[in-house]
Length: 167
Image (tube, rainbow, N blue to C red; front, side, top):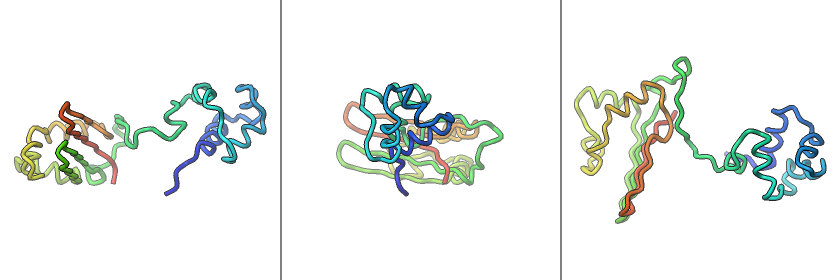
């Protein structure tokens, strides 16, 4: 899977606006050749142009540079929601003492576990995860919330992420 380059993004966003390279160049005060070089990945726009480019295209500079989070939190409209069978709960824990926990569970399995009375410490075998409320996560997902639901970095250096995403 290849990463989209800055030039490719600029070209795509420009075409979405139905602007020519000349029109974009005029808006930015650069030559059409400069825009062409950007889009062909021969050169990059000056860093001072990035805020203006992002403003013209209605995106963030992070998005323009490809730094957007992989899975932003979003509320999916009811008619567009995936079935539980198509969703995965990912729990990532990096403790300050070097322990790494990675749990990937289909949401249907989470739902069955809730019905059977399981909690996260029973599912993961890690007692420190006992405070994660699977029922609450399921409620949020059923209402259409997907993405990185939780990201915590404690003062002692522990990191926890809870992500719900499509499989």
